[in-house]
Image (cartoon, rainbow, N blue to C red; front, top):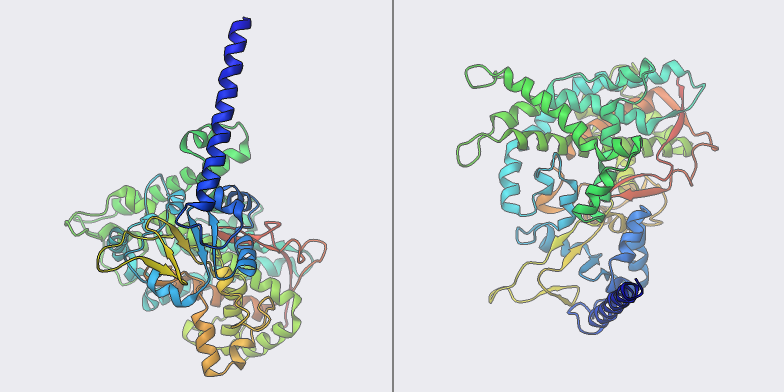
Length: 514
């Protein structure tokens, strides 16, 4: 036994020495021999992913990267093979080029263990997939779904009116209910009844909870190797199980809707209608080979759109309402503008009217600037060079092929040289700027991404946000109970998408006189 103990002790000592030697050797290589050694940044970020991972786990990655920009300048090494930069003039070369594929991070956002448009790294396959649903998200087609948005926004107003301004409500979750209902209608012509469940006291709709959990699941999945994730998956805790199963819950719901629609096909083709739900477009779409999109891809694509649409838009509306609660000066100006076009508070104007309200537009734009729903780094991979292209340079630094590079809207939207007092919520900046300033400000806005992979659902999101914010502001004065909702609870955190630190936004809605 003594000999065995000695052998084990020697083995462990050898392994420890080997690991220490590897760590020291890797650190020396990264700091003194790596092709990225000339990129500014803290030494501890250059030698290990640990610094970045620690901020991902603390859900403060965007702020952490911003702090490096403030210390080291517009290009910084945030991990051994990862560069963050802050320069909008470089965006076109990177994000508008088909040569720079997405980074591997996006694979953590697979739905149903399958790719959808957002997770297809190469631009060729993405372009083919995007054609399947591009027509659904044109402004003209999106406007056809205004009646559904009106119905569910007014249902939300009814829920708030019943509270009579006597108690606060977590609007982050209320607006998720609203978005789930709206997107289900536009995607499947299906009524899930998330708002009705809430009104009847049934608690959080299972689908809303799954959507809420999915982004967090994606970030966690990305942090661990497949085998470790598989082990973590089996932790016997009900809340944890619901989070890791969010993908399966969504896949089950979407799969049922897809099969229902497919069963309604007549003679091998769906009914011809002007106002097609998204599911019909995907089921009708033919690949370049002439084949239909496989059902697994239809399900995964729907899940991707569902998740992206619910979380981001509900967060944007929530933060806007919070700003109205603590900025009565802004609320008054918005009320005056809306009162002029919504004489009946329950009759919502056409989107073309709402789009031409200057102060409403300024409020929404300022919310998108400060509370960008997806503030995190948008990874791209530097491609291999050839004789004609030469080495890739970024802000005067040569970046080798295979390096992950990224900018982030959190920092772009806070450029002090472009946005005066960048942390101040100031809708007037969009109204008072001269033409040159406005062009520069718009160039520094990327709330839906940038370039050829920008969010295709942005028109749907903006239409929904305009309708909701206008109707809520026309019908209510909003206040925040300071013990429940304040700067600390509403501090933005990010797990790729943005959300408040407290993961709630409790506000009180006081009905205005009509």
